[in-house]
Length: 398
Image (cartoon, rainbow, N blue to C red; front, side, top):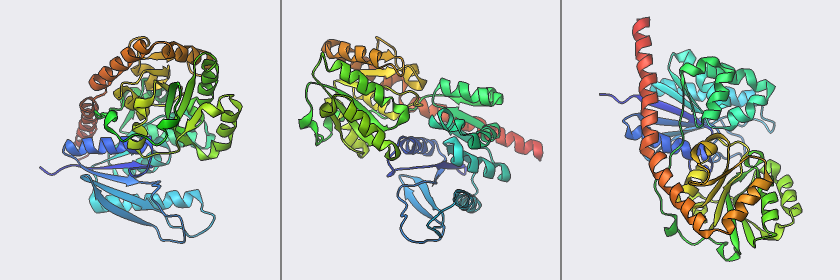
């Protein structure tokens, strides 16, 4: 039997660094293992060279059993226009479809990726799955220019997936028909042993109780409240705040100011953006792992910390609050509360036995409830349902 062809569209894909890219790679591998021929079209690859003029083109590689197409719009001017870029990416995606004749499109991130892919799917009468990751409905929906486009994309999706029930609820408020064509389920993570990774470069600078967090730090990450909490906790406990990652470029000046104004700037260590395994290597050196997000979908960094057996403090938002169980496998606090976060940090700093207990329970939960087999089965159900519906529609039209 001929394999059905799937085209996933995304803003990033390894070796691009980013949570969406990592998730797309994981899901693409799952679909390939389930028997689909998987193609990934990358819209915003950071591997793109921006220097000099160029024609639009698609570069295709075969990567881990997956066809990866990096789409590049032309560079004809020093002042690029967004609609020109989007129009050319759409044309390149349409050419890919005409070449490969995909049976299904699957877009990650609802804005330009989801919109372009859904419009092409509608024109070509092909089913389309859109996957909401977090910021697309938590932030971009508040842009008046994007609201109509987001709602249209959701309305015309064959199926929509969400990484948390909170996101699904918001989606259904915007487009009530999603109640009958959407699913919410969490990301998964492969088992890993971070203790076997090389010793990180900055370990020698860590002092006292190490409070850590991982990611690209920007508005949604709640970093200001973590700084407030560590400043308060440091009065009672000698600690280091270890930030594995870096600030978002457009917010860098603000966050550097926040760190300098915190009163504990000399106790803050920032590694800069690292390749995934280099970042993971820091987890065994964190006494307390924090996810103080204001909203955050289902962050891979949380699952990695749980897999590493870290004592986790997270906020009661999105999948973070759905996955974590306060007092059993973590401590859960309200978002935007530096005082609650400080109290939780102080409690764990004083209680090494509790840290070990929570870390052990967190690892057990992630191995059972967030195993790849669980997520793979969820995707198989979605794909079988959407492709089955498409076959029924073809018979009706015939």
